[in-house]
Length: 373
Ligand SMILES: Nc1ncnc2c1ncn2[C@@H]1O[C@H](COP(=O)(O)OP(=O)(O)O)[C@@H](O)[C@H]1O
Ligand SMILES: O=C(O)[C@H]1O[C@H](OP(=O)(O)O)[C@H](O)[C@@H](O)[C@@H]1O
Ligand SMILES: [Mg+2]
Image 1 (tube, rainbow, N blue to C red):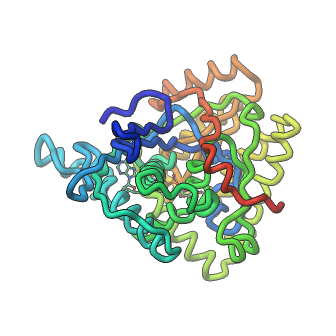
Image 2 (image 1 turned 30 degrees about the vertical axis):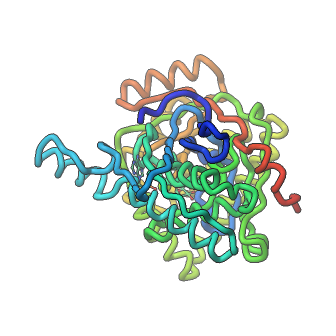
């Protein structure tokens, strides 16, 4: 299955028009623009979905229930023993199959708990992705999110699972695998477009989700994505900071609060089109991450991506936990040219960001809870 085309979903219906024959859903890479990683700490974030990269999951009815491995993203075929070992050393043992398995488990258990009836027909599930692997662009949750959407449509239960609950279920699939992650990726990928998210403890405890507000995507100034072949395991990067936060480390707690406030200030800056302020907030966001996580955990190459951008006067920060950087050139096209040259010289890929519009369909919009802000 080649990732191509721009439509986020496709459902081919059988002749009699009753049950869908093939269901495909796309979920896009996301950029954490401000506030990440405070999403995992009752904070706030602003994130956007980008058309540049996506994962696609295909569900086909079948007599047996099949979870299909991907020929390259799951290490089932290698050209040689050294290729196999090299791949394991760089990208680890795992691919997307475990994500599909966990999605099926979490989806089924949630439906059972909620008394949502699921029919007994079987399916095969396969995936493809062009999201650079483990680069903080949410490649993992894109696979889960697209698979989750396929299951919603196959079982025709889209109207029974509230939109605001879905990101938590998608996160639970990764939690079940022991991957430490937060909600922002999944919220961005379920809703699409540009999102302001508030994960305050009261809402999280009371409602089981944060307060998610879609913002007008035209508020975003031109942004650039910088990335390198440098996979890092977001779970491993996050675990020590998470432990310190759980242990009550004052520095981590106050820094996370400051990071969360950057998203709050950033929302106002975007609404007022105060892009000089946006640049300051983006830079501060990365500086705080660096202080909390430390250079060794972030990795020299990742830090260099941020610094290459800053050397030409661009604002820059990680899109996620590392591997890719979002840059903003407040001085306009000449600065973008300088940034492009600097990235090429450093061996980094650079792309102009293309924002995805909202992904909610009619049913999703109808069943959304009214927002309490
Ligand atoms: N491109 C991919 N193809 C297959 N599996 C992937 C891919 N990216 C991530 N995964 C799976 O998700 C797990 C967690 O990835 P993660 O570090 O969160 O990456 P990302 O930053 O892209 O979300 C990986 O250990 C792997 O099992
Ligand atoms: O550290 C971050 O900014 C994010 O890290 C994870 O995303 P990933 O794309 O896997 O790097 C995590 O899932 C997010 O919740 C964090 O905000
Ligand atoms: Mg991830």
